[in-house]
Length: 321
Image (cartoon, rainbow, N blue to C red; front, top):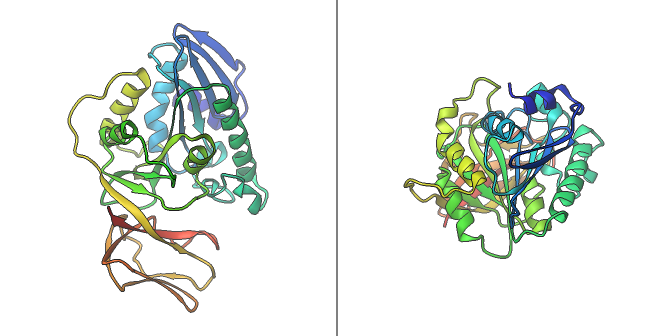
């Protein structure tokens, strides 16, 4: 395992928490939180996060070799950077979370959850991300929050974009396509995700990248994400992404399925893949007397999960746009 990951999984801080190399200076702010300022002044800042869910290891394995090269001064860097491994304790346990879902807590929503290591981590991440953005006045701010899905997907690589009033910048959407994302899903209302927090509070171009299925360390086929890795490494170096790629399919959220009681039943099998299509009138879920029904001619399911805590979403329904 790489040094940054090994130290993060071990807990605590390394003996040396700051340094410099030929390309710039780095600071280790907290467990799994690293910042880098390039020597050459840049008008762009990038937050790269992974491991918000501790069982989603592929993005961590994809990113960590580059982070170690960054510390060693082996790679050019065109951005002021913040690297975050979101939930170190869950990552060490290789569990989605230890107490409550960290990616539902941002924007102060952690206050509605029982106190735990995840609520404390959400607060810390909010504070340090605020510090990161306030240290610079860059006109270009991006946040790539890298995940994997619980289930298999008809689009194995896709992105989920937070709700925002203004349109997304074309260069951001074009890069997501060049990174091999086959679909982009546009939220229609606020959420407690890390990417929504950075979009809403710091006007960042933010995206949750879903790269395959959740697997344990060492079980990921990283060759499946070579396009994403190459595009990411090129982005970090300030190099244009080369090659041709099919444009991603665009979806928007039409409804959320919320689990409100212990009587909740999701009418989907355990092997239902993300982006499975359902026809108008299909009953998707029953929660007591309430039913969730397909309202459009065709809707596609995303993140179906009947086992979420009460009050959280058990799935999203989408339409093609």
